[in-house]
Image (cartoon, rainbow, N blue to C red):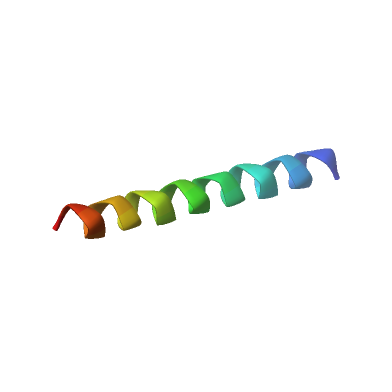
Length: 29
């Protein structure tokens, strides 16, 4: 159960990172 929660936390952090990265790319254009 702890491993599953850890994977979910890592996945959500990765998603946030990708969204922020995409927003920065849009702002630079």
